[in-house]
Image 1 (tube, rainbow, N blue to C red):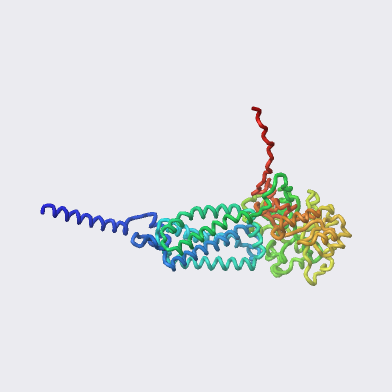
Image 2: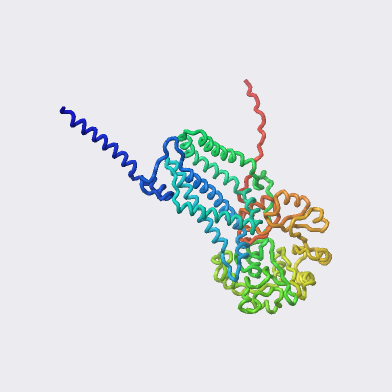
Amino acid sequence: MGSTPIQLTKVKLGKLQIVRRRLLQRYEYQPFLSCLAGLYGCQWRRYQRTRILPGEFCCSKFELFCFGILVATFGLAFVLLYFWSEAKNDYNDFDWNFYSGRWFPWSAVVLGVTVTLFTYIAILLVLAICLLSEGQRLYLFWAHKIGIVVVLGVSAVAIGFLYNQWHEEWNTFTLSFQVTAPYLHIGGVAIMTVLSWPVTQHFARMNRKVPRVIILGLYFAVLLILYLVPLGMYSPCIIEKGTLGPKPAIIGHRGAPMLAPENTLMSFKKTIEHGADGLETDVTISLDGVPFLMHDDTLRRTTNVEEVFPRNKTMNAAFFSWNELAELNAGKWFLKDNPFRTKHLLSREDQQEVRGQSVCKLTELLSLAAAHGKVVIFDLFTPPKKHPYRSRFIHQTVMAIQSSGINESQILWLPNSMRLNVQQTMPGFVHIYGGKKPIEELQSENIAKLNVRYSEISSNEIRMYAAANISTNLYVVSESWLFSLVWCAGAHSVITNAPQQLKELRRPWFLMVARKRVALPPEREKPA
């Protein structure tokens, strides 16, 4: 009888301990899990979360569907981010297409939005994987579900738009894998290694065979793909020792447009100062027959024509006389628009010189090139209809070249119009063809060089033309990784917006030299 109160007390204490344990399981403060579940599913309190019991799946069917959409969105956002990162070489062209009276860095805006969207999705995916590793059931907050759908839609629309409107840039996308494939492969292997723990956990918890087979099958399928990927890798920068060709000659695209206003004397002088091998420009014929340097159809972007001739601001540049062109300023726009975001690199003296730049004659450029022994290549625009020199623009250009005193061998003649007549009149010109053509036709037309967009010719084609003594000039190559790739591919010269950067590159990036195995002599038997 005396022991009964003690036994009852023990029973009550045992029940209290059980209740306490259950309360702790429900309300125990777990900061790490609270942070994960709170950010992923807005489940900041312990009682809102549930663990995955043995035999259970990670979540409900709807939450599993949401997780699948999250993974798909991550993949699509990664493709968009990778594409836009590799397109940096052509950001200037993208921004120029959207020019509407004032230069705006749309490419930087797109990059910022893309990075933000990808980061958001990547964080959600990492949170989900961490929750699964901790054995927690997934529940995605409704606001995140909406966010994922928005990111998925934006990424899909952006990729579709870029594919249709900027189709040639996707060649750069595939070309970049010749450089990045090994690093992407290492990243994929690292990710699969990290995922091995949560996959093993869920495989061990499941009792049903079908979910087990699905999870394990998917995991090993990805591993098999990663195992086979190296078999398809190719890069011209994987070469044998001693087979790397000489560094491509560097030709400034409209001069050095990152350091001075394009197509001005200052721009070409900057190109020469940084040791470039040639100068590239665009030639238009004025109303009175003077060849001058201008890329655009109108003068709005690169001059102050709206201030000087407001009524004619949209008129074709070829309908201005040289006296009118000489009144325009061709430098102030560079400091105002700052197209390459490089204005901070200019000294006060340089900025003052920029403000005084004017429209440049072709003869002025040729005289500068002749004095420094630089080759010149240019696009020659056909004058519009009703232009007085429409039928004689080739003649006017050749006359300007003759009067400049430049050596004929310094001219890389690109225009196809009346090429035969030009060859007869100026036999010393080096003729260059814009695009690709059969070797037999090029040889019959006495063409010694090709001018091709960097993404439209392969390393095998470059070697094929080189074997026939036809060199290749690639445009516009401004990023170091891309210059390294075309160097390894055997290109002979490149047109670039960044001669000051590429001239400093001493060897290609990502160059991997395969060492030949040296056969060792057989070991002699040692005397007993």
